[in-house]
Length: 210
Ligand code: GRF
Image: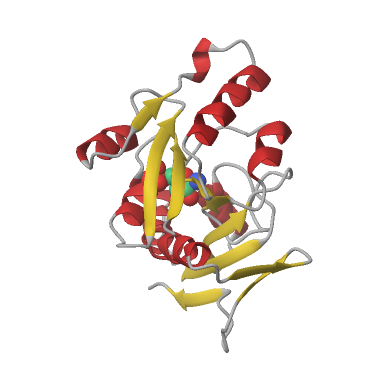
């Protein structure tokens, strides 16, 4: 049975694009955005994928919005919900509905630099290695069992923009990979640690970007 995926995003949607173009064994059942103008919605429409805008500014509070969002997501009967640049904190009630089938990508090597402005903070701290993480979503923001990470070197002349671009190239590689593993039923979560079935090597750092 094909894995049904619902994508949530707020903007550009380049991670969604990478997933959509990766020829994965999935059906993208819908793309939902809290921002009606999100470029990711436009791309979904071009590909004939149901694109739904659910404008959060039209709702009284987060709980009401997230209840509506959960209904909308559920309507598409997802096996997997993919957060691809969804820039709103999700309420515990929403997360509880989809826990275990809710993935996020974060532009740092978690648990370093949860939250926003990760590339600026990495440069401020002078770290020599930075990267990105795909993880299952739990109640704790930017935590949760790690599926895959990719590392990139930080260069002396990096700006937040050049570093972000190097990390983004890796995001586009590891997110489709994580979705593939999920769709193939290869992810095993043992006490909060995700392992890959039938894997003799560690998947935790797949490779280092240049
Ligand atoms: C990515 O850097 C992702 O890691 C973060 O938000 C950004 C979304 O970019 N969560 P895009 O919309 O996928 O292009």
